[in-house]
Image (cartoon, rainbow, N blue to C red; front, side, top):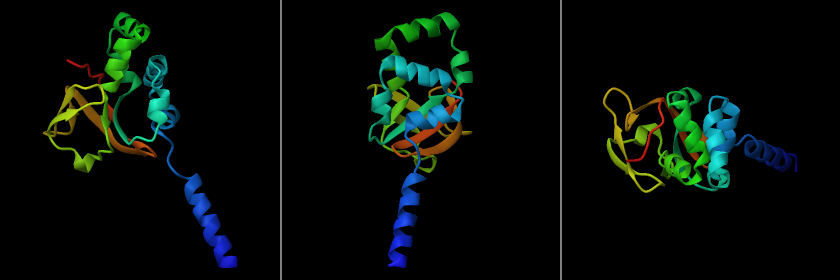
Length: 150
């Protein structure tokens, strides 16, 4: 009986230490405030908290700071355009860094991102600066620029 109780407690602790979803992970990281604000403005929170799995190429606050302020403010007020930009950063499935291959990859938005692996991983013109942040519904790869659909 004692062994069963210990096994149950170990199982419960494993569940409670499970990774957070993509949105909660981005919030707790503290360096994705603009991204989280944009996801909220676009109404994508429930989607990115959903079962997924998703691979998100997540621009940091520093990456968003490269976007001219007026352009960013206008984007945050245009839900359709904002949704298009944000979903361009998301690929269906859970793609870990070791599985990234150069070439074109279809985004949730419907356009293709160009991935290169020469001298580090790049998506379009953004460099992946940190890879494989595992969440319970996918993975986040941190990028240093906002990528825009063509």
